[in-house]
Image (cartoon, rainbow, N blue to C red):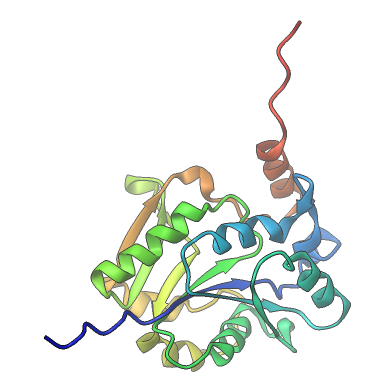
Length: 216
């Protein structure tokens, strides 16, 4: 009997080249729970069962700070030289930096600190089990459910992503076009928090604050 071919590698990609202008400072490096904001998403990716890890960072000093914040995990790092062109540009930079033979990549955002390693493992497992070209994360249940990153895209969908125009919302057109063939991973709604404003940062800080001590 011939040997069973090995499954293609699945990589986890951390998109961290955004400007974070609404935060008044480099968003990936904003302190949260005693660590830079980006460290929470990075730790979840690193424990998520991926065959490789890639981070897209901005140029200059902010990018160097992001590299330093990721140093404890084995991320390959690529610079997006023009992050002002929007999130789609970071997708293109990431796809151009992935090594040959990768079969799928899951794209996570640096400013979603509540996504867990279990969610990433579920994405990888769903892709391995079904071979679906698209695995989407669905937060919550029923009519209140929301689709948001991380999402896993098989290599067959990458040309469509590379062809997209500049935009700040990523590959929505590709997700819509292939949504009928998608597999969904359902996760608790409380993992859905995009730290994009000072108010959202305050919500995240409340989640990472230690519980109050009981009275003596």
